[in-house]
Length: 197
Image 1 (tube, one colour):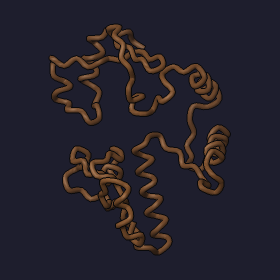
Image 2: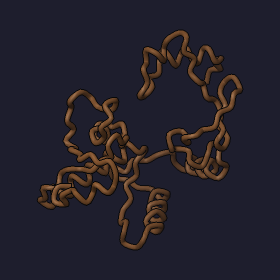
Image 3: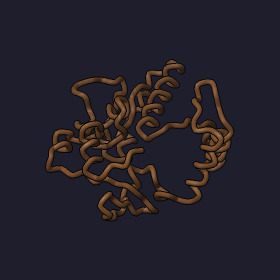
Image 4: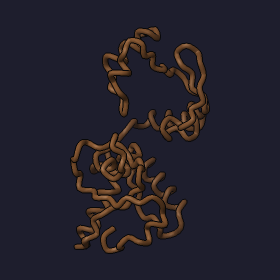
């Protein structure tokens, strides 16, 4: 990889990278200097100028064990030495099977029978919506609505975003066929019709 200095990297970022949920006009403005993070250890991130920050949201909840965790890094290296990735479209692999069994064994008996792997939370929500919808359609049921928290963020994929009431995650009046009943708290669940949700 080419060795670039901070200014070159930031300039290239502004030219070539599209950041999610970001006003790109403001991001690319000459006066805006993004934080260029270059290293992480535990909960601490360091930028290209040597300043340190606490990673207070675990990099959007994907590094809950911290950065550069020695056991996790070693496990990743071992797996990479075997195989980097395989699709589940007609294939499987030992690590995925062993992890699925461990996850199922963690839960109370007969409460979880299968594991669906997803690469992020938004996609996980999207798939859960589709699986639930397909299940009830195959049962011949009219249960077609979902429950979502008002002002809740459920993900940034089209279906997951259609659940929430946050306008910044909606695309005009596009309807993604995931109608959601908005609730403020779990006590509102009692008033919902179990034949529809």
